[in-house]
Amino acid sequence: MNFFGHAVVAGWTGAEAGVVLGSMLPDFESMVKVRVVEVRDNDIQQGVDLHHRTDDTFHRAPTFLSLCAEALAQLTAREWEDRGEAFAKLHERLTIWGPPRDYREPEFVLQRLRDTLRLRPRLAVLEEQGPPLAEFLPTLQSSVERRAPELLNELQDTLDLDH
Image (cartoon, rainbow, N blue to C red; front, side, top):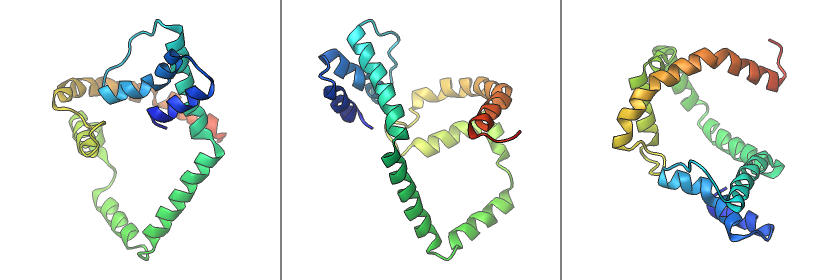
């Protein structure tokens, strides 16, 4: 859902202008690449809270999930229309390359982020963001390694899998 959609949802409540603004604020933060440190206005905070509740509800909505499933099924069907040639190429590539061990290296991860996001202007890593991101990645790597068992347990518990 985009900021306009959030404004429409806020409008359903007959909300004050501050609530409508707050409902769009998280998207605006992403667009301008600046985070709001503190919200001091109650109406704006109500809007921010509504934004997050709306996103959570929207992404769990049966119709949204159904649309995603239909799109995935259609895309998967198209992939296999080639009689599995693309999958065979992927399998060959993975067999030759083996496990993606390069992801252990922060510089490799940074380059992958840049490559992956460069065609998405709102998400692309800007030149001036590279050095601080490169400096942060080892810290993030340590945190992820340290907390991986906790995260995996949460995932297994949520999926109700025996472990």
